[in-house]
Amino acid sequence: MARVFAVTASTDRLRLDASGRGEVSFTISNTAKKLLRSRVKVQPLGAAQADWFSLAGEADRDLAPDATHQVTVRVAAPATATGTFTFQLRVVSIDNPDEDWTDGPATAFEAAGAAKPAGGNFPWWILLVVGAVVLIAAGVAVFILTRAPGLNDPCKGDQCKAGLVCGPDGKCLGDAGYEGCKANGDCVFGVCQDGVCGKPGLNMACPGGACGADLECVGGVCLGLVGFKGCTQSAECKVPPCIVPAAGGAGACAGDRTNQPCSSNAQCSPNQICAADRGLCLRERDQPCEAPGQCASNVCQNGTCQSPGLGQPCQADACGTGLSCVGNVCLAAAGSACTSNPDCADGLCRGAVCVADATGLTCAAPTECSANQSCVNGTCQRNTGQPCAAAGQCVSQICQAGACATLGEGQGCGAHVNCATGYCLGSRCFRPRGVGETCSSPEECGSGRCTNGHCTRIRPWDKIKGVHSGVFLKPGH
Image (cartoon, rainbow, N blue to C red; front, side, top):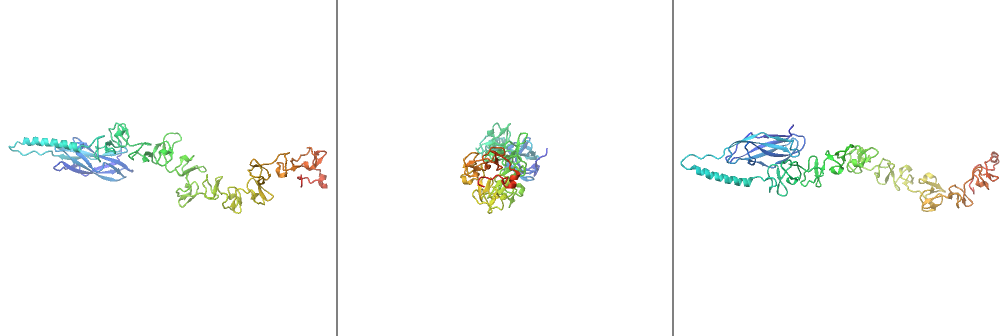
């Protein structure tokens, strides 16, 4: 297995001073291509004891790719220690302590122990006894005063044993990777799994500000970073969305989804929409852009997505001021400037201004009136079925229940426009009779000819004689 750390020592043999103390420097390097949060600790070998060693500086260090740090190990061998002892420096990854670790080269040192007194008649054994008593007392005092606190022991600063840190409540707690916890409360990050302290996972509280791999503490909760795999909803990602496979299972935090396929807005990043016409996640108005194709409006100006202009494609209400999105095209709203009817959302441009309703305006042709209106006697009027507030707004001159209406056959009328048939005869709406139907006068027949009480066809010689024109004339014409 490739090692992610490299460890070298300034010497393989350390010389202690007369008091049994000395220092040696190690160089640690990050050989991985990513930032590693590491922890250094001394590994006593053989008969060497852990409490003989201490670190100058912090045990936890953030190592950038290819970065190197200097670590100084201090040795304080007791006077009772005699012989050659060895130790080595171990570097472990806090996030993956079981796989990413490296031991440095072994470093040896000689402990001389207490010097023997010179010979003579003086009862030197007394001094030996006194010295032993003093050493024992001193050893007890040193042990009491210098013993590093263990798990859940009171602490101050960085005096806890290796693998432990002084928690906010003044107790030594297990750091990430510490082996030996029994409950979550034994670990500084509040996570104990299978006897090993870890960091909070997805959706877990992170009071210490630390989270597991590919997670970040956001608002006191661990959320997935871009690329994190294991989310089930976008709220679990620092930068939404969470893309869940169609077949189900855990999703991944996708981050910026610009120009990525989508079928709904939920699959896009914040301030993006799923453009139905393109099936892609595109940025909304006022969002930064480098090209028009990144914007839902397809308009990128001065590095910002802008609203589409007159005649440009659009979605929903994405058009600029004074424009409306009609049929996925930006058109001028009523009161806005225009050059022709197609420019206007309501389809009518008069006097270079879009008009929503031409009712009552003068006209010379139907094209100068709004949709579902007619130009009658030089005035735009609403056709049957259109909403109205007064009879004068309607072609039929009848406004009933808020809509322009016409009268049926036989109903009382005052003008031809009142009638659905278009004819008012004898103050009643009248339907011209067809050939063969009964009649009492030529006016009742569509052919204009009533013979022996029945409507008849116009004869060719009648036309020649000019008796009838062959065109039915409304009464009064």
